[in-house]
Image 1: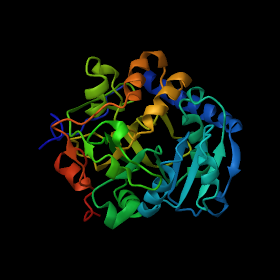
Image 2: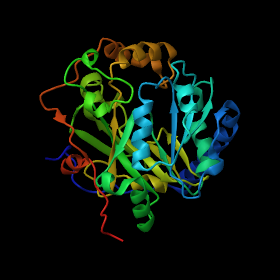
Image 3: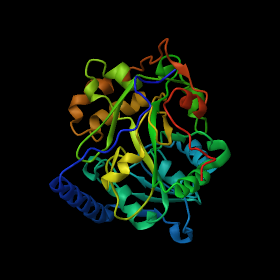
Image 4: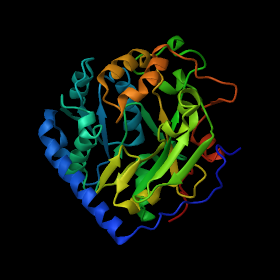
Length: 353
């Protein structure tokens, strides 16, 4: 069963003019300069990077009020193979910053500056990648995202990055898949340290649609749960679901829109979406834990998460009442091999190279 109506083909980069290529180079330089200046907004809470090895696998996360998720999040990625976490706390008041500062493999910075004004945290994250990520594999994930891929329990993140190095591939893409419970959101039980995949065991296998956008050549995938529930009448406003979370970083690189797109543009071809030919995984998205009901009203007032936040008031209001996202076509999540059978991910050919 295919998780979309897409044929299993790759989408090449669109051709662009020399003028467009020149403009992209200058855009990348401007973004890097923004990030360099944004370093002044970050205040060190705990910097443990002095002992970073040259081959350290680094995770970079910008967060706010994620104390409930952090114990499982850290242990999940430690087990996967992350050596060190670089984290920016954007004004948390739930004790998460204090918890992170006590973890020996976490370096943490704090800022009260505008999340929206920092390109939704990208300026801060890019500065940390410039400072600590050059020539290292960097995993950029949110606190509510879990990266899975075929063979992850056997090979781990180290095995994956070694395989990518042998294939001369500088990155690894993933489809964001929303997880949800089998009833109303306010009926879910979740405690710190719990596996969110148990509280939110269901997902939509499709449909998904994809295209490449000019001039950057970034993929654009939409569909899935949030489009079905919140944007059925305006699917063009549904969230972007493609990400390039794992990159062999270079200080000349810059994400342009979350981890959905990156410059130089050639890196965007590393992910060709569901039904594609490139190796890929999935980011299991645990947004719909019961705390989302309270957070939605807070974020509606803050207006920090969208370019036109007032246009998403109805989205926040819908979340605040704890809707039931389950439907009869939902599938219970069983593992990355299931996602491969649905053509939503593609495991590396571990025997190659």
